[in-house]
Amino acid sequence: MDESSLPASESLALTPRIWAVGALCRAVADALDSRFNPVAVQGEITGFTRAASGHCYFTLKDASGQLRCAMFKRAAQTLDFRPVDGELVEIRGRLGVYEPRGELQLVVENMRRAGQGAWFEQFLKLKAKLDAEGLFDAERKRPIQTMPRGIGVVTSLGAAALHDVATALQRRVPHIPVLLAPSLVQGPEAPLTLVQALQQLGQQPRVDVILLVRGGGSIEDLWAFNDEHLARAIVASPVPIISGVGHETDFTIADFCADLRAPTPTAAAEMCAMPQAELLSNLQLWGSALQTLAHRQLDTQAQRLDRAQARLGRPSEGLSHEKMQLLRWQQRLSQAVHTRCQRGHNELSTQASGLARGVRQIPANARERLHRGALRLQLLDPKLVLQRGFAWLSDAQGQAVTSVTQTAPGQALQATLADGVVELSVSANRHI
Image 1 (tube, rainbow, N blue to C red):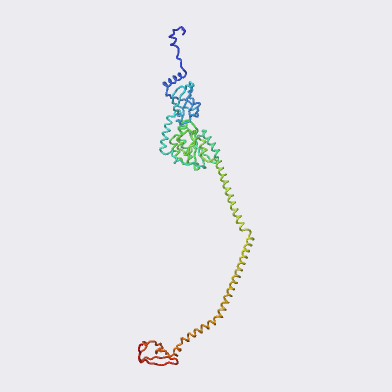
Image 2 (image 1 turned 180 degrees about the vertical axis):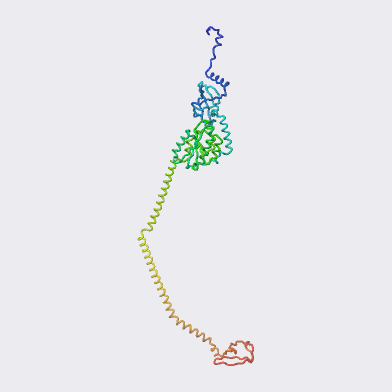
């Protein structure tokens, strides 16, 4: 039946609603939201990009389809890993329509590696346990020697990490011996072999640092390095350990227990010792400094020698100088002796003249003094007194009698007169 032959009322009923494009997009978005959201989907990342704004854009695909995804900055900041193309992930978000382009789009609110949920919970649980025991404390960790006697390496013989580490060590420290302890780095048997390899290297007397390395991979690939026995073996190792497991964004329990964590295996090789080129450069600097110091010391001593030689000169010149000095002192001494003798002679002559004058004056002075003395003696002569009528009385012992109290009646006395002695006898005595 032709539509033109239908009645007008039936023709209007069959005509579809005419939508505005934006309105239709919103209607589809509402339908998707009411039926599917929130939605969880698993797929492989492709075309991952991070804009300057911090928003991330990529496509999630599998063998039968693909879906455009947008993860805004707020959600992207919660990621604990760096998404890469080809990685299988689980996404939770809201399905909708990007109206400006009319494209189906999944706005991502959460992303994790596929199967990571249970693994990650185990990781966090073990991490909290060991952290509480102090296995991650910075005070426990030991410094890495800058010039180790030997370097131990624990990794798989077939791992690309071994090639990277060996290349870096050969380039930087070819003079340091390297001892390899092969081990599994993936699978259920890997933790035990890793522990045994560490213990083997820890018993080597000339190994001063151990590199525990493995290339990148998923959380399942790196799970051997989240083993509790391995963590305790790292802490118990007598030799400091540098871990270089996975990429820079990968973290394992081994990284937290190690004495030093490197972002990659190659970085671990670069951090284990000071490179030979730097050692040689330092040696050259020290050699130059030592040479400069030696030259400076030699110059100083040469200057001291020159000054000493200038002061000493030639021996003959020194002897001549000393002879001249001695002659000058001899002349000064002779002149001083002559001057002293002359002064002494003059002083002696002066004193002799004075003495002669004194000697000549002595007789006259003496005679005069003698004459005066004689006159005084004459004046004191008792005979002169006796000649004037006085007498000198004395007792029988010859003692002078000068007082009546010295006499007694009948006592014999002598009276010495000017021309002789008279014997007397006391008849009486009385005081005047």
